Image 1: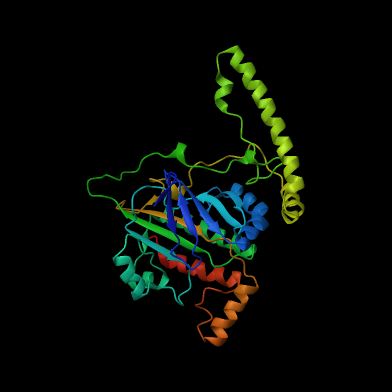
Image 2: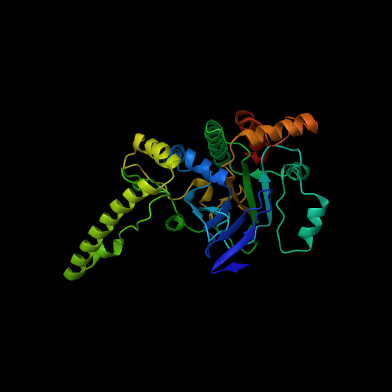
Length: 349
């Protein structure tokens, strides 16, 4: 359903999170737990640096991390991020590939519910294996994507993150050519290098940027007015940054801000506006150009904490499930298993 111009959708996963999509489908707002919010703030400096150095990463791009409390209700945490499926068209098939296989299939009960509802089912690892399906790409595309996924998984393992997955949307191109690739260079949102400053950090700045339209006004009075506005905005930025330093949680001020200031970025670094896996209608075309694949690494805020260690113990020791096949395993083992499944998913032949 639509909420004030946004489209609401409940997650089909175990988290029960709610998604709200912008009218153009480019951005998504996702509710999350307090633990996920803390995880994002903890890895934020390293994540920001990694995104800048790897513009073709498949890891979700986060644009804002927020919390809101209405009266006496429970604190609500949510994140603003890019949408893996940033088009209005419905996917013909959706996969959520994690690498594990224990309880990673759509049950008969869920299949029955999906059949008689407007909700589109998301197939999982066991369903993918049963279909004997692969994403057919050109050798060059396949090699680049597999190398980037391996690099992304290595980064996540280094930050003690696991339980992530590759979300895949498949859309068949119509026979009449209705989905021919179109240029999208100017429409894809990217994190810019100028978000970094000594007094503020990305995802936390509350002051608006000066509008570039003022700089090209032919009228002298407008130019002067624009200059004064920019001065006020700059003063507002400094004031809001100092206020934030005094009011933000201590765990974020002392640790995260210190990490940000220890990093150095060049303001002249090249910014790639479109990742190579989104060059064809926000996706990547198959080798024969009869399908468009929309892919992205999602759910990257789950750390291998005490609850996940306990889950691993319970499933493997009490329920006697395969320890290699459960989702909750140490990050390095999860990384290796995830990469092996990616080799099965993509084909370069």
